[in-house]
Image (cartoon, rainbow, N blue to C red; front, side, top):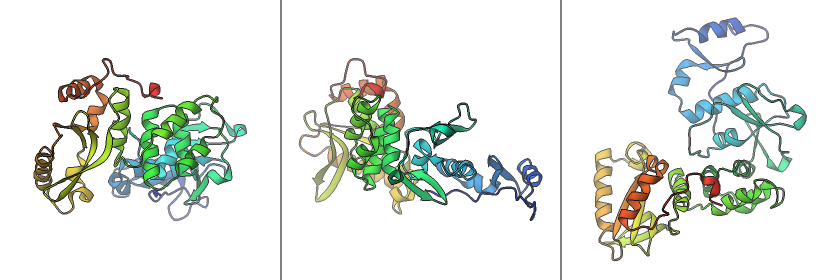
Length: 320
């Protein structure tokens, strides 16, 4: 699970230079002792904040808010997604999401989004002294929001991490007639742990929106004694679709000791090798940004010989 930055709060004894006024003054300065306010009476070192990535900044704000809430509050939804290390298809939100008893619900709470669906003890985990919904319950909560794209991205990652699909379905609760449960159940059914990244998960839902045939995931091909697995294989059309991202050329886990130029050359050789496989006609490479322009993507896929709907569905809510 993800950890927050070190959070400082004003000491009730106002000792060690930690009075509220002192901390606020340091937050307003630009010096080496600068602090950044991350919540009510909660600050972190400016240098730590500057070095942190978007997820850790959001996780820090979550702990800053939950650390002063009543024990009845539980981190949930997008906030639990962040803490569990799961992906979201968009930026992390500004608000912290909590699930609270109905008696604690208040509308219009600044910086907080409150939910009230009961959380049984089996759906709770504790991390850093703060309670969050379990991974299965977190996926279920996201699915019940009705956005199939986001639900599949989160569910794919949870299944890859070893969470049982049955536990997610159980966490949905209710009956098939309950509002949103049918769409949520369908989103969970669409989840597939073979998707290797959030981009591949999102692509799979987008392909469904576009009316494409169901592709084979992680199809292996052997060329010259070397094994290559492709992201999506459409056997009837002879088309491979690969989802590329900048991480392949910048992150060490993909570079594996190579330079970005070496990765580019290796990818080019891989591309050429796959085109020698009998039955492979075309290889289409797409990026994350392409998944948000369905008109342009439709034109590219049609040119490659993939059948697409005349007018792609623009909202993932209709996928189920």
